[in-house]
Structures are given as structure tokens and as C-alpha cells.
Image (cartoon, rainbow, N blue to C red; front, side):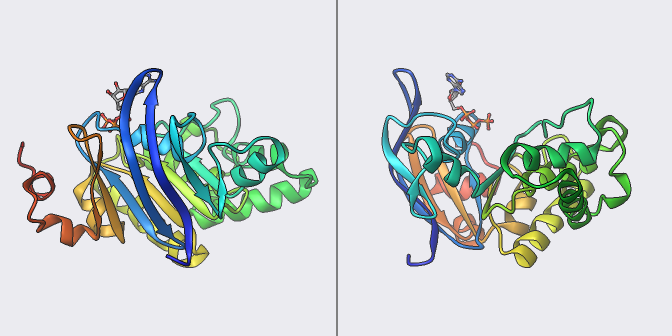
Amino acid sequence: MSDAIIQVKQLQCGYGDRIILRDVSFEVRKGEIITILGGSGCGKSTLLKHMIGLLPARQGEVLIGGEDIIHALGETRQRILARIGVMYQSGALFGSLSVLENVMLPLAEYTALSAEAREIVARLKLRLVGLEAYADFLPSALSGGMQKRAAIARALALDPQVLFLDEPSAGLDPITAAELDALILQLAHSLHTTFIVVTHELASIFSIADRAIMLDKETQGVLAIAPPSELASHSDPRISHFFNRHIY
Ligand SMILES: Nc1ncnc2c1ncn2[C@@H]1O[C@H](COP(=O)(O)OP(=O)(O)OP(=O)(O)O)[C@@H](O)[C@H]1O
């Protein structure tokens, strides 16, 4: 795949002596929206944490923009980290800072922009997610869906090429979750950002994913990677049943 922004090669994930996933290999094209799915405890979040360089891999590589995030150190690691943005499940906004200050935070940490420039950039990011009118609010004054959008604005602060979202619709009602999906699609199309989204939500998977990666707890690996419509009619019942909500 010549236009791959992410290349995962023979990755083995785990904690201490415990292996969760082995021999995981796949590539993601620039601008693609990929969802990671599979039953509870199969290792979706674990894979995501390895792909953002948060956990050391036991074996294998994760290349982002051609450079290995797993083994990079120092300036190289910082350069690779600047290519990605992450939104964790909880959103994890700082409660004592305004929405604007939350979005300005990565700019203060990773850029040499003046305070004025940081504010301009942060307001632009808030406009992208439809929250420009809420810049001075504390996160607690926002609804759950708005908090998720603010967290996405913060993850976009440094103009990442890839955005990782861990269960973005967790805790949201179906309408708010659908609005968040619409935002993800809009950002992917307007900014050409690549999205890696961990989600259980079938509606989300069908509405946003170009391809879905299905993980399996038993085999500790990737069962399939394909467009959701193909997975839903897959001949392997472990895959098709997930989409039809059967227990296997
Ligand atoms: N920090 C950790 N230390 C040790 N084991 C962990 C740690 N985090 C997760 N695990 C284990 O790794 C396995 C995979 O967990 P993970 O959270 O990646 O699964 P998941 O597919 O994201 O699950 P869910 O859908 O329930 O969120 C589980 O058995 C879990 O108990």
C-alpha cells in the first residue's frame, strides 16, 4: 500500500508476561477511517495504546509516517508523536481549565507560538467542532457530547495526521452519538485526517468506517480487516455474528 500512513508489522501486544495479541499486521491509508472492533477484553484498547507508543511492544513495529513509534526515542519520538492526536474514552479534559484553555494546552507544550497565536489556533479548532461559543465555559458546564467534541478539538490542536479515538460514543445517547459520527466524517473529509476509532457501536461502524479491523480473543489476533458491509456477510460466523449480535 503505497499511500500508507500507518504500517503495523508483526506486532505482539501484552502486559508483562501476558500476551494479548500476536502477529498483528495491517496498513492504513491516508484519510481512511478505520474502526477496531471485537468482543469485550479482546485487546482493542491494548492495540490502540501500542499504536500510540504508550506501551512497549514485545515484538514488531508500528510505523507512523514511515517511522517506528514503538522504538523511537528523543527527538524522533517527539516528531512522530506530533503526527498523532488522541482522545481517550473519558475525554479527560482538565476540569479547572476553560474549554479554550484545554485546547491551548498542547500548543503551549509542543509549539513556540505566542499566547495570542495559541488562542487564535485554539479558537479555530473549537470552530471546527462547533464549539466556538463555548470557549470560556468549564467542561462541567457542557453536555457529554459537547465534552467529546471539545476533547476532539484538543486532539486536533497540533494538526495531527492521525487521530485515535477510544470509544468516542461511550455514554452518549444514540442521537448525540450520531452527531459525533457526523463530525468525525466531516473532519476526515475536510482535513483529510486519518481516524483510528475503537468502538462497539454497530451504527457508528456502518456510518463512519471505510474498513473495520476485527480482533479475536481466542486466537489473539486479527480475524479480518474489510469494509463493514463485507464483514457483516462474512462466511466466518465469528465475524458475521458480531454484526448480527449473536453470541458465539
Ligand atoms: N494495564 C493492564 N495490565 C494488565 N492487563 C491489562 C491491562 N489493561 C488491560 N489488560 C487486559 O488485557 C485484556 C485486553 O483488554 P483491553 O482493555 O485492551 O480490551 P478491549 O477489547 O478494549 O475491552 P473492552 O471492550 O471491554 O473495553 C483484558 O484481559 C484486560 O484485562
